[in-house]
Length: 392
Image (cartoon, rainbow, N blue to C red; front, side, top):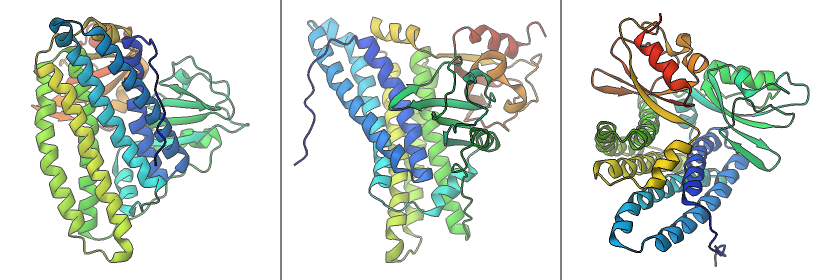
């Protein structure tokens, strides 16, 4: 019999709960994929520990909502918060499902690593050794295309740390960025265990599965980015894009599962292929959680004042800018444009000719591109000027 933790009510402000849920859920997705990539039990266990925290926060949030809803008008205003919690719960459960693959030693087929090798952006776990040049360096001074999304210091997690946080000996850095840059970070840290194994996949059928898996992962993550953006910008356009992508994901996932099941594997490979199927299911679950967030916007639910406070208090702001023909960004790749270094904003998505792109460092910026970016509020003006060409 499973011994579940008894959760007692604590008077935690709803705003604080929502902010923590958002940060933890995003970190869990990153750590979960990383645990699968490195087959790291340590990271997988951290995911499960974070899921317990999420479960406790959601219980307390539900108690708060019940205490607050005294009239019909109250209930209507609080529905949006309840739906956000539901979407976050779905998202974190999906992340935990990936971690369980590692903890249960369900084989991760070489295709998975091949798929991650094909993705322009990678996630690495790096331990800072005692003689590393990184010690004492502020995160803002780290190569701009490497984003440190979390630091584990002892048993404490620093989620989405500020640029002025100094790196210490023994820190575990969870970082993402272009392949060359993240591996350079591992080298400077003195961590020689972070090398990514290059595994080739032979045969057109297996390569097709790897390509389809990359597409599933990219679209599900793009949907989460767009869904949060639709909520923060109160944009029906972005929310509708999320719902259209959700329908596309349904078809894509079905095709992917059929490809895996038609691989003609033998019984000794069954665990490897089970892992492939499970990861496909998780990508679909992440897409569903994004659709739940977008649905809040599409239903026209009046945002509760708490949600507005969360938007104002969030560490990151989401902005939307269009690239003019006068912009110095035109013709440059995202890596060349150095937008994070110049503005403190990270590009989440680009809309071009009616289609959404989840950008890579090699993606070239074109006239008319609609850029969705997130970062600190003070960078919003800088990015707008850069995209419009004002002052250049």
